Image (cartoon, rainbow, N blue to C red):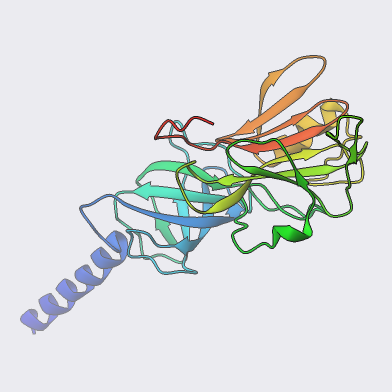
Length: 253
């Protein structure tokens, strides 16, 4: 009877120990996912790319983000998480030992823009769009409905109100995939994150902060909000949304 009791206790110990440790690995692992919920010191992430982890696509896991150097993020952002390989098998699953979190893509807003920053456009038929000439290292296109005029020298003149999309290789200039890496806006009807060209600098800053952006270079004439490699700049005449493109090979345009 004593042996049976000891066996049961040992089995219960293994179950408890297993549930506490969860998925275990001695190697650093990483995955990419979308932030679904944000808490005081963590966030709920839905896996979109398991990368080197044992997680599966659509798994939901709570990720600790209270460590020093963790970037600001917002619901809808795409983040890459590097951790110690241990996943607690709670509900939802949880990762406590996180080495780094990096912003891979900012939340796609409700917007009347045709494309969003860092969006892949490999399959877009750009023959339907008016090309803006003169750029080296990429291509620029006017949004639908915006048509430039020509001056006396045959040079394009932007319409008073327009949107111009810049298409380059991304995330590095040496890559083949094409993405939107700059959006230039002078049309006051364009809206994203609740921001328009008519927004005051104060309102612009407040709305950008809700999305996890922090104030960068600014003065009385312009204001820049930054999050990782993404930035949004506003003057009284235009708004520019950018994502930084790497240039590891030192390409010169």
